[in-house]
Image 1 (cartoon, rainbow, N blue to C red):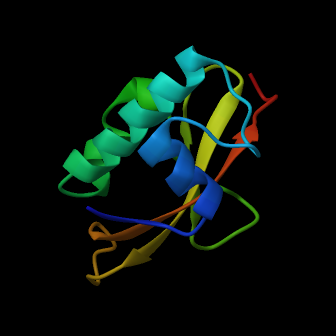
Image 2 (cartoon, helix red, strand yellow):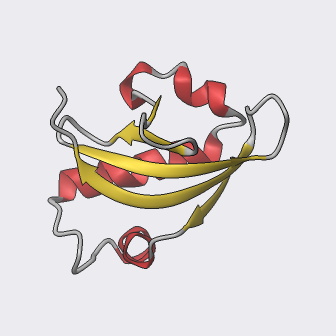
Image 3 (cartoon, rainbow, N blue to C red):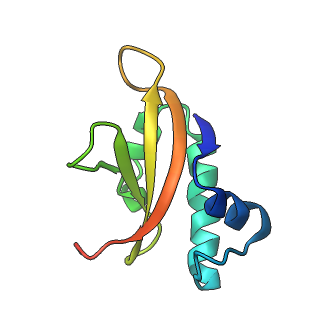
Length: 103
C-alpha cells in the first residue's frame, strides 16, 4: 500500500527517531517503525487484517479512519483512501499516535 504522512511530527519521528510532540520510549518508537514498514509491505488490506498482533480495526466514529496496535498502550491512527471498488487497496495517510485504554 502507498504511505503518506499527514502529520509532520510523525514524519519527523520516522525519519529522525525524535519528535518534540511525541515523547515516547525507544521500544515504542521501534514498534512504530515496524508498523510503518508493515503498512509499506502490505499488498492490500487483508495483509493487515490477517496479522493478529496488528489488531487492525476501523474506528467506529469515522468512515475512513482505522487504527493499528503499536503496543498495549499506543495505537497508530491512519486514514485510508481506497483506490478500488472492493476497498482493499489504497493510499494510507498516517495521522497520529494515540493512547488506547480499551484493553
